[in-house]
Length: 117
Image 1: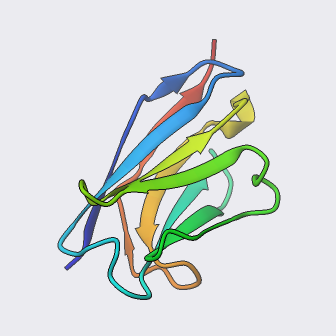
Image 2: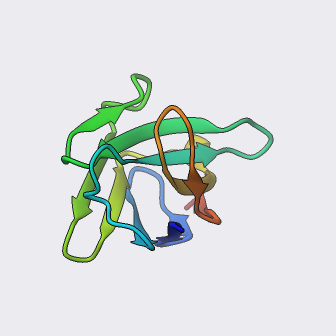
């Protein structure tokens, strides 16, 4: 059974870059046809899909976040990462990593990230 765990700073200053890492256990991020997503939920709002990295390393991003988002991976550590640049307080949210793109098969417990000076 795949398990995911997010890690990274809980507080980021405005204009800086938010960086989070997802460590995957119980399965390989290079397994054929698996996809690995980042999702967030701002306070009082619904879930927002941010982007995905596929088993072959290809990436796809939400059009609304594409200019600020980068997803990468470290296959030796079975991890994938999120970078969101030029953050503002509107980027304050619980950030989740997940397996899947159109259907979420497994979800991490989430990590709170607050953007504040």
